[in-house]
Image (cartoon, rainbow, N blue to C red; front, top):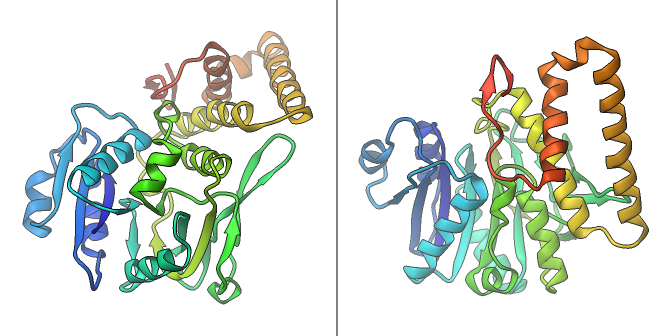
Amino acid sequence: MTAVVVVNWNDTPASIRALNSVQSTDPVLRILVDNASDIDPCDAVRASCPETVIERLPANRGYAAACNHGVDVAARRGASHILIMNNDAELAHDALDQLMAADADLPGRLLAPLIVYSEAPERVWSAGGFIEPPCLRNHHIGLGDSREAHRSRQRVQWATACSLWFSIDTWRKVGPLDEAFFLYLEDVDWCLRAAEAGVETWLVPEAVVRHDVSRTTSDLSPASLRYYAYRNHFRLAFRHARGLARIAIASELLWTTVKIGIRSLGFSSYRHNSWYHARTRGLRDFVLGRWGPAPGVVDGGLA
């Protein structure tokens, strides 16, 4: 049995659309994990998708933790394969069947659908991803391309957890998503860990997912997003870099820290700029080993 795990946070209508897009010729277990939304989504989801298993967490534990929880529930209910999915994504009518068929050809891999823009479904948002050395910058493949440019299956270095397929056996082999990331780059980290465990990630372009890009994070301040980007980048980079690449990343961290110090001492505008302060806080928390959710937001900045 296949299970589809959808993570919800403060957007029940999007989650209902995502759940309703799940179609298959085989039985599918639908699981919604709610990350302590301000309004309880249970009644609305049960009315629209009565077969859905709803797991409402007592606190917002982040995307990785919600996915981990959903996979654990699916495993206990007997699922052999999982598709984790953002609630701002919708499956094409045959996407799940295409992933099932691809799994028979590519067993034991992580399988990534071709993800297109909801408002422009002929255009690609992600056809997998690649890592740029030496500092391990991550990039989407095919951003803005025509769908026709990505018609062949191919191995990729990573794929977004916006929509990602795997077996329970593979999940147990790689281990759960790293919940310390809280938000952003937990998927890149997981794919790289999978590769280290001998598990490949493959693009399956015949399976298509429409994505309302960044809808889930629209309620977050730009400062919070910047905080996660900097803190989590260095967590990812130092974990996976080897040899001289680690020296390059350490040099980048040191130089960035020096620039922050100079600008903060010399220019008061930087000290009171919430956008700049978010980067500073992200780097500081990385160095101090502080993970989980971003600090509180005050007037668009970080408290």
